[in-house]
Length: 159
Ligand code: HEC
Image 1 (cartoon, rainbow, N blue to C red):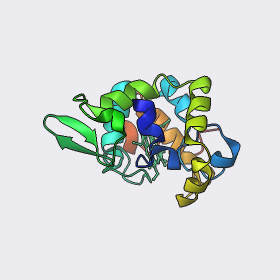
Image 2: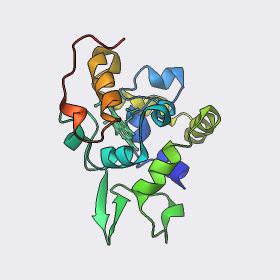
Image 3: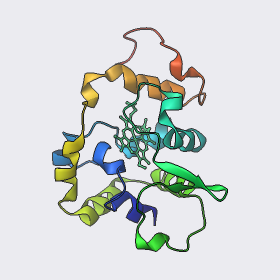
């Protein structure tokens, strides 16, 4: 189910996030989900996808991807047919899925989206390479969710 949300027309995650497909990734502005499990905790990721700008006010990731509905968070855009009748929390679903993504799963995602990714990636604005300091900020903030994100840290300490 989470896979179908990731690859659905309405879900924007893969517009910005890299997926290991060279042609798509050169336009991607956000990190590949493969790296997430090493660096991040599920709680932090859930917090992040609900409201990225709370953690990092300057982020390019939108904050209105989910809306609260009857005690749970649901994806704010159109959801795939398989979501009909599903009463769980969509952020939980996505977080669990993100922690399971591996290279084989990414290949499946790429296949499911067919040629879609290439054209959609054009929507991006900033390139990740242009702001390496942001990367290290995210990595640090994963250690103590929410509070250290604003810590500027020593300049140039990141590779
Ligand atoms: C408009 C572009 C955009 C969209 C759409 C988007 N993201 Fe992001 N996301 C980013 C950027 C950019 C970052 C990196 C943080 C930064 O630079 O501010 C990020 C970071 C993340 C991170 C932290 C990853 C890490 O390794 O540090 C997670 C998790 C994440 N996004 C999940 C999602 C999910 C799930 C969706 C879809 C529901 C989504 N994103 C949609 C742009 C986007």
